[in-house]
Length: 158
Ligand SMILES: [Zn+2]
Image (tube, rainbow, N blue to C red):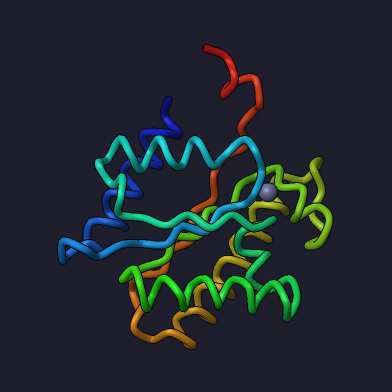
């Protein structure tokens, strides 16, 4: 599938430079949406990154990092834990189209994919900049990636 090939190419270009030492790792932040975590895991494992990443799932992904003081603290506490103990060298935020959290909290609409796409870009840009500002050791190693809409039927059939 073209979208998966694009995801794999992005991951390789983003993750390889973060994993210089044998124990270096990355943190993935994705939405809790049930359509996506397995797809991300499969793409990472297909690139032989198994054992090299932590995966934090919070509703809305980039949105979660700025949802409220409590959610921001939960995100940052997890990031700080893996920065200290990973050691994590980079962060990849996986937003996705057709995100209920964005519809609920960011004012996007299922009928306006262009508007939703732009909102994801705006929020990911804001959050990645805030992360690099607070954790300058991650500079050039924080990425946002917007996954396309995926139908449940596409991932549950065998
Ligand atoms: Zn979502």
